[in-house]
Image 1 (tube, rainbow, N blue to C red):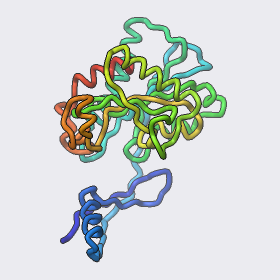
Image 2 (cartoon, rainbow, N blue to C red):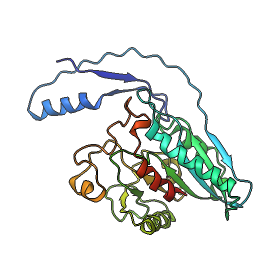
Image 3 (cartoon, rainbow, N blue to C red):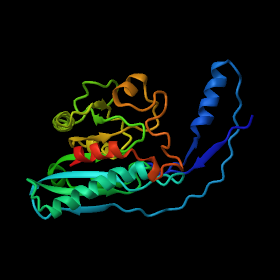
Image 4 (cartoon, rainbow, N blue to C red):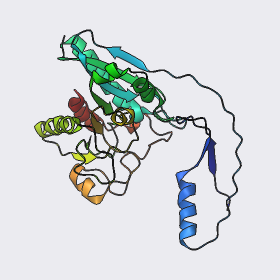
Length: 272
C-alpha cells in the first residue's frame, strides 16, 4: 500500500525545505489511523534547490492624492499542475479591465491607484510580502487600503466578501481598522445588484496577508476554492452541493472552460 508523495522545496520566508503529501495521501493516512491501524510511512525525495527569479508588475495612476494610495492586487502565478485561469487569471483580468476602463473613461480617482499583479503567491505570498517589506514607514502610512481579488470565477461559485470586522467568522484574524468599512462597500455593491453574499475569513491564504500583518486595512472578493459547497449554499447560489466551489483548484483542468462567466461578470462589477 505504497502512498504517492509529492516532494518539493519551497522558499516560504526561510531556506528550510518542505516536503508535502498529496491531499489524497493525507486522507488515506487519516482514515487508516482512525481505524486503529498501525501505519509506517517511508519517505524518499530527490530534491534540487534552484533560485528562481520572480517579478511583480506594478502600475500607479498619475492622478489622485499621493498621500492616500489604494493598492488593488491579484496574483499572476499558478501552480505547476494547472494553467491557473480561475486561479488567478480571473482576478488579474478583472483588475486589468478596471484599470483600462478608468483610463478610457478618463476617471480621476480621489486617491492614487496602485494596480499590483503579484508574483510567486503560490510559493508563499512572496511577491506581495516583498512589496510590503520594502515600503518605508512613511510609504506604509500612505496606503489607505489593500483590495485583493483571487479566484472570482469559480464554476460552483458563492459570492464571498472578506470578513473585515470578524463578526461572522471564528478563530480567524480580524482585519485592521478600516477593513470593516471596506467589507461594507462590497456588501452595498451586491445589495445594489440584488445578489446574495456571504463573509469569508481572512485565512491568510492570499496576498492581503502581508498587508494586514502590518496594520493596513484590507478587503476583497472570492468565489470559493477546494471546499465542498453545502446544501444551504447550493440553495442560496445554485450549483451542486457536496462538490467543491472549484473542482479544478490547483489542477490541470483549471482552463478557460473552468470559469463561471455569470459569476465573473457580477464579481467584475463589484470589483469596479
